[in-house]
Image (spheres, rainbow, N blue to C red):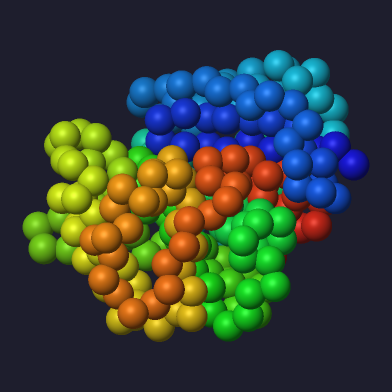
Length: 249
């Protein structure tokens, strides 16, 4: 079955058609810049435009960059504050007339990686970190999703959340080298290791493709590997979740 997956990010909203059995994208990725401000009306318009681009009429999976519980936005993260308390699924279904499954974006990326990528068959506690505008995190115990593990929201020193200091956007905004930024990212991973003691950490998102450039700065004991699906994982995982219904709590 071919399903539409949409990955909502801080800088871009991307969509593609996905084979739900193989996890392969069957179309080119279509991307629109995330509107500023990131309000419900503006972002919903963009998502509807992506649906229209594919002339798609089936179920849609959507990875969203914040905590989602039963389709409802429970934190705003890097979004406009007006998102708080909004039923994202209901809003998108009203806008498009289609059946939406909305889940945390890092959970979507992890869902793809654990079903079709390097995480398939991995046991124990696996944490997926997506590196982008923020630091998303998805947790899986023996392959089963534990939703809304938002470790990038932890406060750090003068920062209200550590992702403001250690995400990929911080590297770009401050013009940091991979060596300097890698040290910051390792500090974040030290907190992840301390708090949840994972058996494996998988890195996804845009920066994961450059893992070799900051690998030497990763000093934690837990094994850290890049995701093969890299920046497409969010699209693939969201699409497949719309059929297999990743847990919604």
